[in-house]
Length: 225
Image 1 (cartoon, rainbow, N blue to C red):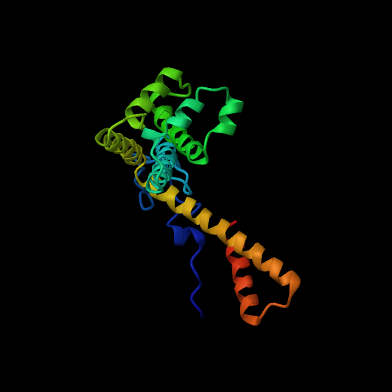
Image 2 (tube, helix red, strand yellow):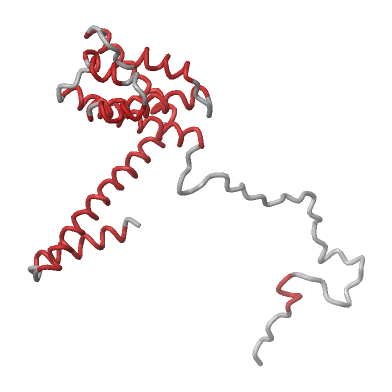
């Protein structure tokens, strides 16, 4: 005769229904302590694990770097804000006259000046930037009329130190931002190329190679969305 399988009580080690209360065969030690299982709360954004301070510092540092690159390019192209007497005088005229009379190089320089200066003053002074602070930072970081070459170099170093300071606060958040910004630049370039190829496709049949390249561009743009 086949062996009968044990009951659930047998498997679990439970006493039978007719067991006497004083029967210690099935007694189990009482659990003395209860350890709760607590999971750590998720406190960070997986996509962006950096603090608000780091993220802001990264953006400020990136803006400052771009401003430094723009002003360096203007100087390399022959522009000298220390001898730009014409635009210096025109800047005191009403805005409508200044906008017409000043040169493109001056306007590009002033745009970069404003971008770097506000990126430096915003974390230092908070949301409100007063005129006195703007004057202070322009005197310490930006070339003025008749500044000698040594002073101009010292001010350029001050601009770079401001960038490095914000970059240090940002930490790895800066590297992440630069990667994202450069990827965005590449994507914009791809869009422009695709638009040009689309105009060609509207006028003639693309070759197999051109069509393949156009298809790959479309895929890259879609993947970047």
